[in-house]
Length: 504
Image 1 (cartoon, rainbow, N blue to C red):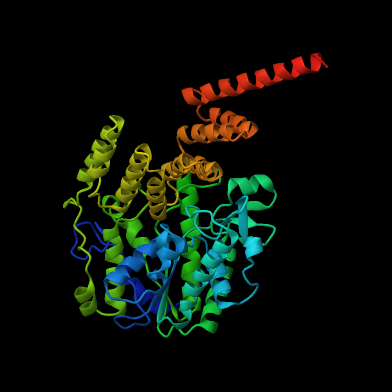
Image 2 (cartoon, rainbow, N blue to C red; image 1 turned 60 degrees about the vertical axis):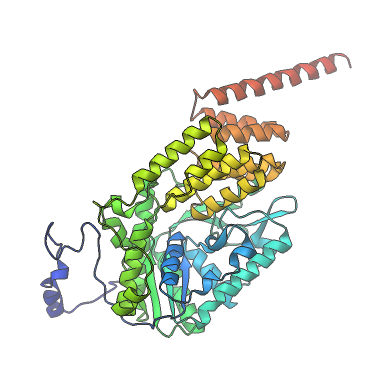
């Protein structure tokens, strides 16, 4: 079934409009290079200072920043949220798959099966629980604390009922499914939980019909229970999958994920008159990569985020408001450096100082880094230095703050694990180091995890991990040493048992 039917006369007229054609390089009307600004036609407007509800992936957090800078009310940025959840801050609200959006709205509005903490909170180890509908970088906590945190999130999400406009950002089509509860998760299940019940979870790569059906249910629910006098702005996050659980190249898996989300978003926007599709995704992926992407090639530069939010506000509110309210530095053209090279040099200097044991000097050298990815790198450096200086508790906070910015950073998860280990919290350390291994492309983190498993007496798990890792890094000296250590320990145990049997 077509998502749009256009009479032939109108179609012929449309074909002759300037926007129906790609501009040429160097032309005055080039809306694609170096920064893509695809045209769009809003069907509604909202007032300066309006209440804007936001929900979605990490890109939604950047949108919130830009809205706040322009004087809008953003209820999901409640000031006490960080006090409630700790250093994870607002990133606790990241929802990546369409099923996660639907879950959160159902639970917040009290429609359908209620949130059951006994089913949705997983005991990762004794008396410490994780909510897999929340990002992994949150600190594990007691059951009561996890329930209280959940209630605060429901309260924030209920603010959609009285918002003037809502912005939803779709993130990915690769999601995990809990067969026991029949619920799609917002985050991968912890390996300790999978190991305890390996048949409980499975990975789902959603197809178009599933995603469209979930979006249809989501917006039917919202329009039945919420005012949203202006309407809904729907976007697709340009931030790619940081890693894939499929056997594909992440670039291929990501292209499918974004394509199917974009197709479903376009169809749902055609079905509901109160939904506008906003082309921030197209703007980012069609823009000059040097301008659009931070050094990790995953996160969008804050300046390009501001270009997109600025365009959105200009069209939905008016040009006078954007120029009066915006406090963000305008985007420089590619030829105008914004200090990226200086940031890289500062990081190199800090790492050189760390190799020489100059921990305090290394921390001081990275205080002025600018881009989002550089902030993650700075926090990692600070955390490593603080751990070496015996400040493991402060290192823990630095690594958690880094993960709040980029939750798939293997080194930040690993650094957090080592900070927890330095505090004697070995079970928690194993959880973080296991996550580091999941995202890792280096042998360091399997080595660190295996060492910690050996310390806790879990030698069988350590042996299996080392053997798997040697299949990837067969020449790694640390892994080879660990295998020899484990083999030697196994031989000693076998000889001791044989001696014991002989004397019986």
